[in-house]
Length: 276
Image (cartoon, rainbow, N blue to C red):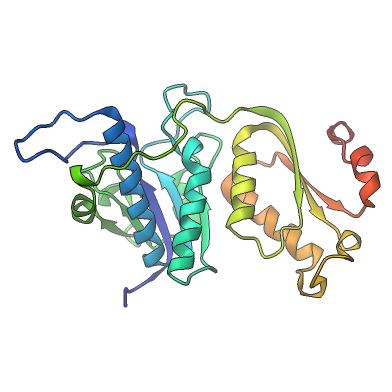
């Protein structure tokens, strides 16, 4: 059985710093852009699988390289566009490895989100996993990490896993970055905060530039819900949402609302203009 580490930070490969190593038997080095992109996506899926194998309590996912401006137009192949799919892949691997309780969080590589140094310090990260500089020149090196943090480089595993005969064309979002909005409203019960909730909240955090309003369903609105006695308390659900948002973003730019209203009142009462 693989020895596990409580808290793991996983760096996915960044196409900008990717060094293609997969060549033909004749030494051919020129491969199409689509093949390179597919190789990176396939390698990143393998990294996610390795990360889940290694993490016991929490897996924090980010990209190699430094933080970018959210308006960086050259950052089309970035975590911001792949993030929804990354949560889906994480969930599939968690199910396959019987680790559905693993706390997975996907951080954007933009300046609004916390830096890697802050992530490592605040979450008491014990292990960093990346592809190694052989594949991605922007990977965190041993010298950049605190002495208490171990480093696992997976260059050989990825080289063995991804080859020219295994290129796959993935559906991804390279040319249509997520839009931006000043004010975003969303709501839900947020019981037992899981990857679906985290995906929704992370997308909203990235798309929102000024104010994010998060409504959490109150007790009164759950009276007709099946198995309502098993649902976490309102205070616990609101606390989990607040803790998750706070762990991801810098600053406080969101409001948490208690949906204590009757359903027919929501369209009138839940109006962003009432909170600014």
